[in-house]
Length: 58
Image (cartoon, rainbow, N blue to C red; front, side):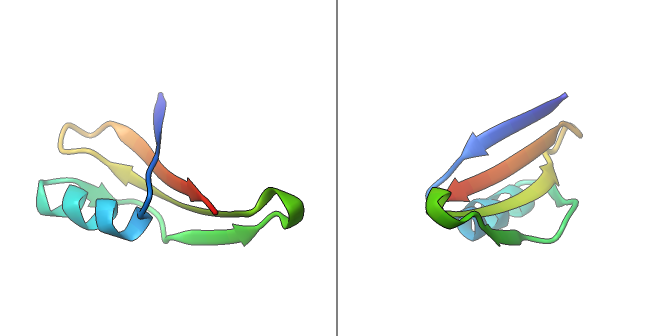
């Protein structure tokens, strides 16, 4: 199962997650989807090992 959270600042939330026992699983990805905007996303694990995607559209 993958849980996704939309956040205002991916880097800031990732930093807080790591400080509280989580882990970064992938690199932060930024992809421009033209008229839809730019997706910034990273896959992580919470302290209990659950997969979480942190994302932002701008």
